[in-house]
Length: 72
Image (cartoon, rainbow, N blue to C red):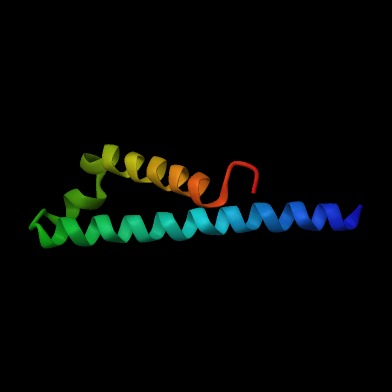
């Protein structure tokens, strides 16, 4: 029983870790790209670019599912 719980925890934590790493990487890439393109730094992190941040989260979720699979 404990082995099954441990395996489930390992699977979930690996999937969560993958998502966090992808989210941070994509977010930093977006910020750097916008700054290099000359966009005002206040606009990059503010509500103006909120739809882009939502897209980054959705992309990170989809990449996590692709890399780790739906079940693990």
